[in-house]
Length: 219
Ligand SMILES: C[S@@+](CC[C@H](N)C(=O)[O-])C[C@H]1O[C@@H](n2cnc3c(N)ncnc32)[C@H](O)[C@@H]1O
Image (cartoon, rainbow, N blue to C red; front, side):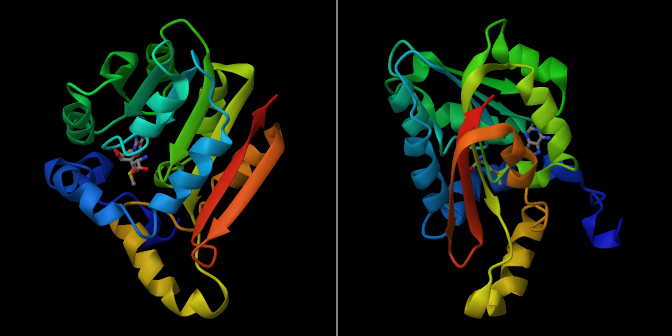
């Protein structure tokens, strides 16, 4: 493993500590990264009453659209291992409509126990991971864990990053630096782990291939 792809001494949790959590929405919102969730969430075909898992939910940028999609009878569970990011997500939803349908769980998405805690005994109808799987050392392991708490036919959405191509390849060092600062491996391409197990897939590529979206049905 090359030295630059090792987990740094300050670790991944601290990278998403209080300072990042406070500034995350400002630095990670429009114009570049919001397009991923704007494409993925409507394409998941969420239905009223569904249970949705948001893997690595961070500060909860996906949550309003997910809660809208499942309606008052549905349930959204955000799983993240950073208490600081979860605290921001919790604060943002406090008092807003739909807050009752939301549960935030702290844990590692590769850990089957955390997945079971998120599911609380009922399989999920849908799962989404936006800009989160590329932070994990083994996206295939995360996917194996997640399939343990998904029902067959569940909707799956993966949004993540890759090096920009074509003329925008000139911006690749900048994109790589942004990913590295966020702890992501730009070459992880986590959608490739999930894609062979999905049917009815649709894929999008934006910002010269830097933002990739894959949506499909599992099993
Ligand atoms: C770049 S942020 C993305 C947050 C959110 N999904 C979004 O679209 O804005 C990555 C998030 O993944 C979380 N994360 C990274 N590795 C994780 C793991 N193994 N288990 C759970 N959460 C993890 C981080 O704490 C962070 O909140």
